[in-house]
Image 1: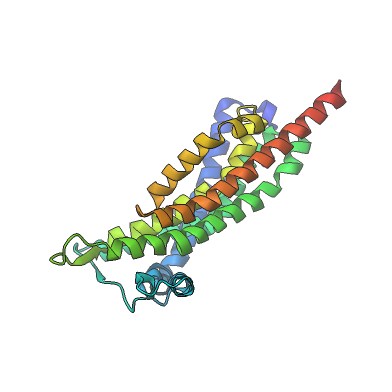
Image 2 (image 1 turned 135 degrees about the horizontal axis):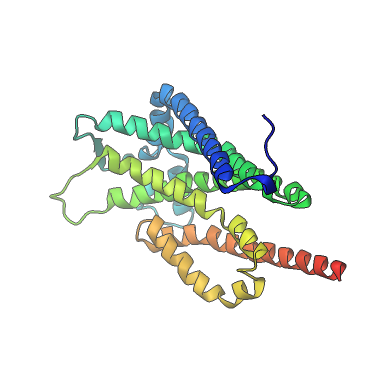
Length: 275
């Protein structure tokens, strides 16, 4: 069936179109989640529980850095973490398996999810806008995956290392519930993935006139405070972790200023050409 022209579609037609896009998105996530569930044992062994081992690449690298700067007594060079992961409910492991597979399915299907959203809004764009916006599917996916990797290899191990070794009394043993452990990994990876979409968000906000390079430069100091608060939310409360997380976010902010500048420059060129 031929798709109606956007100008001819009623409000209910748009809702029907959106419903089918959402159905395709849901099916894509469920298919990817099913694949993740089939390989869930490998998923938990090589990804979920990998940051729990001191053989994790991040700990090895931080251990070498600590030794180079003369810090020998560091938790990054320990042989094992002083905690165990436990399951305290009958359905805890099954629920963890299901939900971990669903979140893994979302991450895997993310490019297709973005494509479906783009397919929904693209008919309302001009032909030149559609041509230039196609690359955003690749860019958004790349930024999201980079953010997920940053959250997994940087934020997650820093958080686990800090929280696992934090102790208020030797009378207390760390026995973390499996849902709590997985939630830390999930929130660190997904939060970082969405934070890395900042340049794309700034691009669209600039396109509709809500943000300009001048505004971003003017409120740079406030942005720094927000970045530090955001870093404190997604990382453990130690200064080193917050600084490590804040650096790439500040870089993304500077990149966003440049992107906003380019968008405004192109808009001014078009206005002059139309005069």
